[in-house]
Length: 354
Image 1 (cartoon, rainbow, N blue to C red):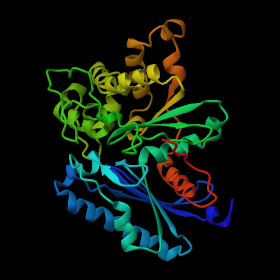
Image 2: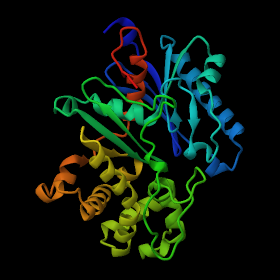
Image 3: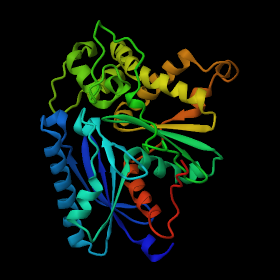
Image 4: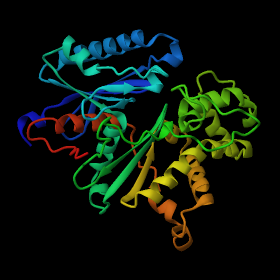
């Protein structure tokens, strides 16, 4: 590795729940970790132009603070929970951050104009997560041709990456891949509820049922299904759901099966259509909080439908193929570091042959 590629990188992970920043070493060690609550349309009602100004100000303030102590760092890499054109770096939309706005945003240009002496890198958060998981020795040595990484947090998305080359095949014109959160959910809501509205403004999307923000909204309306009062203001509804699941609450299990059903169908379609995918890693804040309950529910829904012929001859195919990777939650930050190093001369990185 040359000197440039061995330098630390300032990394950000900007999602719909929280904004994190840190310094990432060449070996993926994370230090100087800082967390700030996300400022979004859903939690403020502010207009998108104002929200983007707040985001830029946050990134610049935090970058300047860290760089005042670490002036040798000249690269800043951002993992953002948004649809990003991987060919150009243009941010196309972010339902978790900016709701139904689909006006493209040149985040890179804004940051470069403010701090032209820094190298700025912008990538979709699932791209960064896929890079980090693909870089694990346990994945590289397994012999998989491709893997798919899924994140279930404030939004839902996926990314398929070639293990040997690190190639991410993107839409040739629009530069995106794996926006499964905005597919139709194909489920019927329980308890007589109507199909919910997605943050993007559409009705009945996968993310409108299965994403973390959606689960919080559902449980605020149907708190009685958990059978115990939600009387601790510091506890989220998802954490309350975890307690109910731990206690064996049947209504909580039924609710969770409803929540995981849309993702289960999307993954069945993936496994049916793309036989190159050797493994699917499901992670994210919701999965972390609900733990084994989440994966058990996902397995139940997928095995209830099954894969034509394959499930007959290999009943364990779903559990063999889909798992929750053990993680400290910092992979999006590590992936942002990897993404930036791949943009450097001499860096080994994502090969986009789309």
